[in-house]
Image (tube, helix red, strand yellow):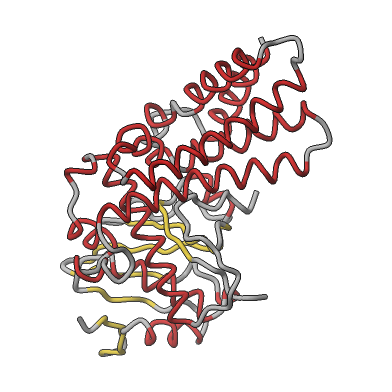
Length: 118
Length: 211
């Protein structure tokens, strides 16, 4: 499979969550929840989320599957993080590869967490 | 359904292999176009600066110039991209439809996809076409005319009894109906579910063309 020509984000719609088999009510109580649907050449492939924890924005990679490959995950995360206010932290997903994705997007491990250093 | 129509604000694909850097640039360009369509629709072309466009995707104003020579180039890319992808989509529909009736159904479904996904672009197209440089405006108009003619030709097969001017008039009226989404579809939560909206628009468009 070749790399997609273009990776885009859009405000997540309920129908996107159906496509991704995610619960529409998942975490809606979280503070400042931002959800973006990730599309590769128009096809829905995952989702990125952030919540506010105190002064910090925390990004989750849980719904950006490892099967997408590092390159697509990096492209999506970079677009997302650039639109967020600082400071930004991130939680890696369950897979080891997500750590590399975070590092390529400018996150560094600080006291067991990942912080974006800008 | 796992796939949704590719946004008309996507960059044109050249088919050439891109480097990783090139792909990131394409992602950024597409993000700028999507954000620009939203900002132009919300505030009007005149009310948006290059800095606003950059801020919407998290880059500086000057960084936008790596992708576009200026604000008018962004507007041109949105409107030219939309009219080109509509025409390409209609070409594809007509190439694959077994008969005129299914061609018309597919044209309607295709245009509904566009109207739901790109309501911002419809607003910008309605309001800001005159802001384009004459050359670009001419290109956009010519792409739009060819798109309309696909509809007229399909209708002419279904209703050979009707004059072409009437069919063209009906096509434009149907676009008015389908392109109503900026008034209904830009605030999710204040309209019926996507599937319902789609069904209503398709049914109404078919009736308006064939009544």
